[in-house]
Amino acid sequence: MPGATPAALRRTLQHAKRWGWLGAVAAGALIAVFAGAKSQSKAQPGARDEAVVLAADEALGQAMRSGDKNIARHLLSLQFTFVDAGGKVHGRRDFLAELKGVAATGVSDAKVRRYGLLAMVTGHRKSASGRDVFFLDVWARQKGAWRALVMQDLADTAAETPTASLTSHPETAASCKNPCQTIPYRVRSASEQDIVNAYQTIVKAVVARQPDAWGKHVADEFVLYGTGRAPLSKSDRVAAIEQQQGDGTSIGEVQAMRLSVYGDGAVMTASEALPGGMQPPHRTTRVFVKRNGQWQMAISAYTDVE
Image 1 (cartoon, one colour):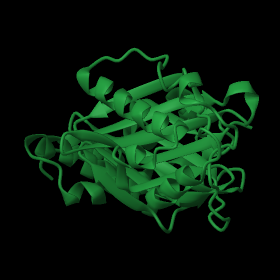
Image 2: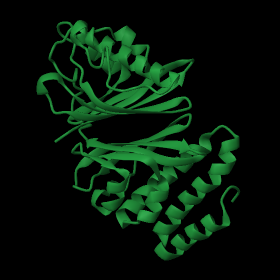
Image 3: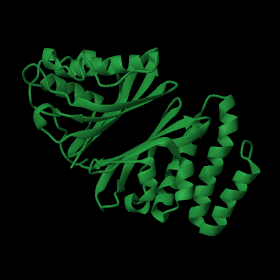
Image 4: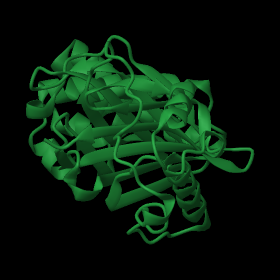
């Protein structure tokens, strides 16, 4: 295939012979990654990327279950992190070291959505500990090849009634210092500053109970996922903001944050905690997309730390 080196092809085919069907799936995904690296660098990514990302996501899952660190290593970004259903963060090195120990079951309902040089795969699976979880896997196209950047699990409670707000503790806009006014993160580019500005506008709108202002910076397909809560669509979240009591709702303070921008897509990961320890701290992943010159939040998923 164009773009793949003979050595890379030989290695993937050797895996296919050695591991049978698993090797064939992983080999196909790796060949697609290698083949796409050259050809996609000369053109805008299209619908074909979604199939490649899905194949790579499946191959990574299979590699985890079989403990194949070599295949997994090829599919992970150097910046990769995994948040398990208990809120523990696994860096790339630790993740590879405990590969089979964190492996989930196969996925039957995976869906992919691409935002420029970012793509996110969502669905449901059973975690290594046997818990039913909703997952968010974020992939980034780095140097023309798709690599897993973030994986996050959270306890699945899809059957429950949507929760009106993250917490009922009232807070005024003036008292919301972090993250409304400041965030412990040093921006590295104009795009990062624009995303931080958009995020702060979003949280200020929640605190001040301003659903219209909130909605302007949130994509129509937005869904909020959280541990122990049913998912909230954009319209659900607007209704929840309207129903808030008092001046508004308190927002988790950002303790640490990482922001990565890939063209018109961006992913923000953060460790957050509500003031006074009112609820467990949580790990959050947010994906942003730039549309018509404006950054909008496309998904937000948070996992409580147990």
